[in-house]
Image (cartoon, rainbow, N blue to C red; front, side):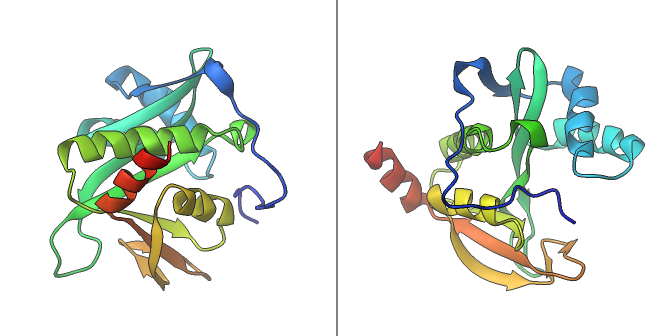
Length: 182
């Protein structure tokens, strides 16, 4: 059983509205960030260490808050996606706590990160790796200009036990097209 939102194209996302604020993560967010990370399952102590590492290491890490409660995060970092290649920009950890999903928060987080990444690296593509079973996340990425470029059991050092991951790419031209559509 996964904790992915069941994808139903007939269900429209509820909008979270103005109550959601998106901002850069700070060192003081480490504990709350680890709580959000733990909604994916796993060891809370491990997530505490991982959260501190993300805040220190990622050049871009945004968090979503509702009434001062952290409800999601998304980041980006240079990463060697395939051995032998130069590091490329990779989305890191687009996660929203289950009770707040399907409200547009993930889209706002991802767009915020993409805007920050493209401000500093306008001509570089951005990649994302998603579990192939997570259709809601794949559709979100596609709606924001990402396109599938590959599938494998292991991508970006993530092993998809019993399944496959999807590698998606957003070209700089997709950003320009999205900007003219809005």
